[in-house]
Image 1 (tube, rainbow, N blue to C red):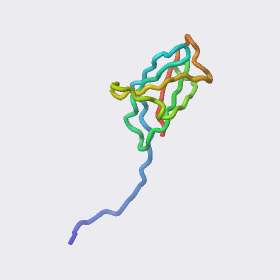
Image 2: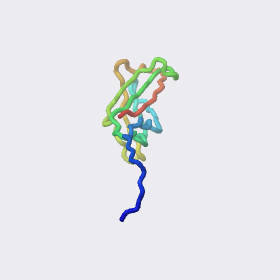
Image 3: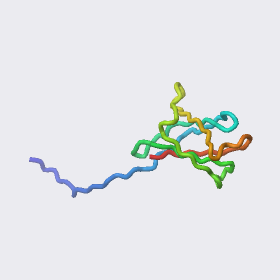
Length: 111
């Protein structure tokens, strides 16, 4: 006979969390109006598959006039023998990057 005494039963549904951001973000110039974004895949996905990435870019470091670009998580390519780096060609068209301008860029993951 089992003499175990149990507590009352409780339950709770866990919630999804926001995924970690991409890490080790870097950008390489690719011509006059394009660049390549290099990054490490986020360490935690927040409990659901990462489906998209959000890029904010601006000529101002405070992102006061930031432009937003969303791309699917299937677009970046994993670089062979890179230790987990991914690369994405970044060439926005509306508005395009202006040759000779300095840009600031930040990224987040979405699910």
